[in-house]
Length: 157
Image (cartoon, rainbow, N blue to C red; front, side, top):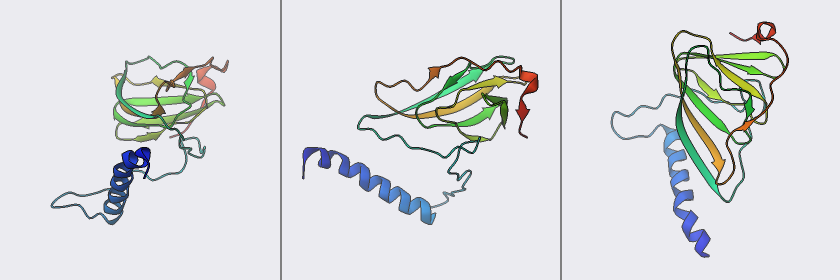
């Protein structure tokens, strides 16, 4: 075996074991597994794509958006997942669609699609966000926003 194969073999074996245990729900003791989200698409119906890289890097962070504030228009070239810890977030898309996420919701973010997250509530929006990116590659790229006024956006419940 090559040195590279020897380095990644434990990782591959670990993923296989985790998949087998997770699929069977075969954890030890009182541990329970409850599926919260299984999807192959983002909130706008876009098929999910995984990044292929020899330099993978996972970044986990907490994002706090104050009432009335927004993220600014941006896009992600890498897969991004989030969990809404608190608040109500409206994600505006350039096609005039708006996706609403509330406390307890899971988010599979759109890829390569300009969007803006806005806090429409009176309390902070707190998100646990996970970027599955690549070393040296930005997880967020700023983009210009559309010219459509927010009041004309179509919202989803």
